[in-house]
Amino acid sequence: MPVDAAVARAWVLAFADRVTAAKAELTALDSAIGDADHGANLDRGMAAVLGKLAGDTPGDVLKGVGRTLISTVGGASGPLYGTAFRDAAKALGDTAEASDAEFAAALRAGYDGVRRLGGAAEGDKTMLDAWAPALTALEGALDGGLAAAAARAAAAAEEGAAATVPMQARKGRASYLGPRSVGHRDPGATSTALLFAALAEAVRT
Ligand code: ADP
Ligand code: MG
Image (tube, rainbow, N blue to C red):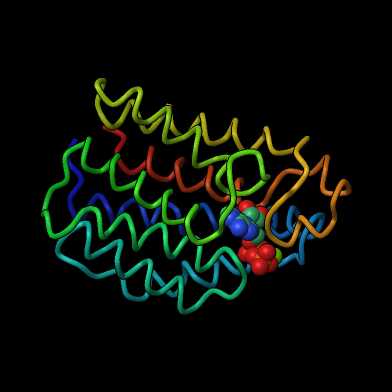
């Protein structure tokens, strides 16, 4: 299923809905190992995004999302998610319809942007622990079509988020807690699982 501007918008809308629904949960997770603002941060950012969800190409749509998140969300997650969308948009260029492989490559570029900006690696108990398995699953299942691959990616992201519970945080605010960060699920990995669940919803056939 090629990804055009309408599919990109559907993805962003579905993500915004899921963030709103999970706002209290994300904030509760962040209150355990952070400063209790992750749900509010993302919900505010996505609300701003919905106010100006324009663009004729998927790249345009995602570029606007990235710019808005970077400028409206305080905290680590705004610039990180903003960079993910912006770098994905850059990879898409001005194509009107991205192929499954082009779209997967754009998501990979977004992930690389998060890694570059945040300097974290897998296992550091961050959103990367959901992104990385999701992308591996997506790429590995792409031959069966984007809808099936995105469903696999969503499941892998959720597993990745759950797997952050026993990890000790080595990046971000949670790392200040040292060993006391163990035993809690990472809020950012949890919101990244929502991002991939939203994608699966948007491309479901
Ligand atoms: P803040 O920590 O500034 O309050 P948020 O609460 O909105 O920002 O987001 C926290 C989430 O951001 C964490 O749960 C983690 O997943 C993610 N995060 C923090 N630092 C990094 C980093 N360097 N790289 C990747 N993700 C990070
Ligand atoms: Mg926080």
